[in-house]
Image (cartoon, rainbow over all chains, first blue to last red):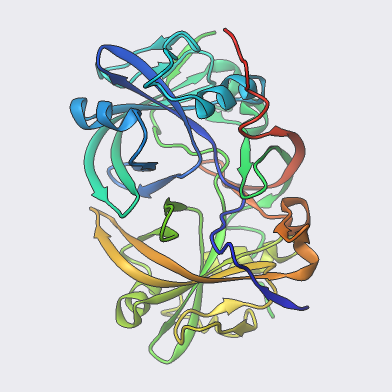
Length: 187
Length: 187
């Protein structure tokens, strides 16, 4: 196996893809985000890393709240669209229908099978991005995406993004049970 | 569509799965990590959120360096194993072969198709986890996982993890080109 040192040196595979909703001015805005992760177990915290140039950021700073919606494959064109155009120039508020949970400024997307409303707990200032860390105050799932009360990834049918080749991919087959199939593994 | 409020309220789909390597004491240790994301564009920063109970953490704090290796499906049992057992009780240093790039304490896994060596820039202290933010100083790919010089997700064949149902999944089919298929989208 020949190891090649890469000039572009930053990769995560597979990368999730969510839509962050925020209220900027008095208007709901959406953006596609691949830089997202759980970051704390209890309380449940999630982080999104947004480039400082994004229009969405000021809404999160102002209201201290944001929504995270996980789109299914059927929304891929709308998802791509909200990643392509800036809310500064284009009104994206009608691309999706939204609903609220307990928070006033954390718009979640009705058409997305799984959504979370988040309250900002910390904004980590990095050189080109701001890492918004939010506490997940509530999560909402379409009943059709659940199996035995838990979200079922095959029913959610989420999208993964690859960079730098800029492609969207679906989820494939079941491989094995986590914290199980490696029991008794020996090298 | 009926929206159900979930009692377990924290989800990311699809979640990546990497193996973090660090040197603890004088021994290489590995752990499986699903809470990982790019967090800054330039310089390229990546973050991993590790529960404070993990053995790996002290090695990252001590040396200020760690490796991130992206496993393919063929490594799923070994990956699961290094997520199941703690380095405090079990010597995991021989589960994988490692190699070094420019950094002394950022062990990367030879068997993984794509790896990165990271230098710690910030450790964000959260209630139950520490978010280690590292600058990616170098990335290395097996030549067999590249297409036109870029990593090819179908050749890498990475693993995604779902929680709370604790399952591993493969990547499926190509859906569309990012920042392209949404052009001209109208609601």
